[in-house]
Amino acid sequence: MMYSEMKSGVRVAAVAASMTLLAGCATTDQVMEREAAVAAREAKLASVESQIQKKERMLEKREMELSASNKSSMDSSLFPPESKPGHCYARVMMPAKYVETTEKVLKKQAGTRIETMPAKFADSQERILVKEASTKIEVVPATYKTVTEKVLVLPASTKLVEVPATYKTVSEKVLEKAAHTVWKRGNDAINGAVETKIDEDSGEIMCLVEVPATYKTITKRVIDTPAHTKTMKIPAKYETVSRRVVDKPATTKTV
Image (tube, rainbow, N blue to C red):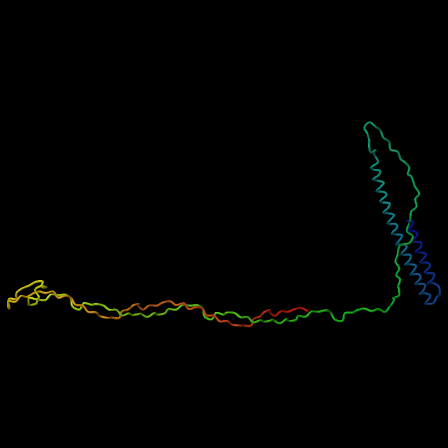
């Protein structure tokens, strides 16, 4: 309440002072200066009031903490910590003890100050980028070489060949007239006669004589080897050729 009454008194005095200043005769400039001064004082008073309210809230919070601390200490001290059966205890109020201490309080809040340092200039040299590094792709042409190789022109194969018949001349004894018997007259034929008889008409002796077979030699051309076919193997045919081939193919390189 003490702080509240003080604030009200200061505010009333400020209002009274501003009204006194405005009531006098003054020029327009003086009125504006006075109004500015009054506004500055009111702003300062508002700042002071804000600080006072802040301190009041801090005091109230501190009082609540102390009250809660005292209450908890009283509740825990109602009974002795190590009471024994058969013993009587009395609660005695011990006076508070005070000690003088030196405390460091804040006189002025920490702040910042901005100072402008003048720029300093000096001549210097520096390298600047005129053209960035880059890459390009170059073509490396292919290289060639001449090689000699054996190339198959005609593969191996077979064919059937007709072999004509062959002939030969042979001599052969053939029967010209087979052996037989004939009847002959006369005594000359009696010795070699197989059988004899008398011819009833002439009364001559007829002898049955064996006539041996007669042969003759003939020459003829006969087949020596008959005509036939045989399989003939035809070997493969190769030719040696030279040609130009790629030794190393074309490539690219990055520069």
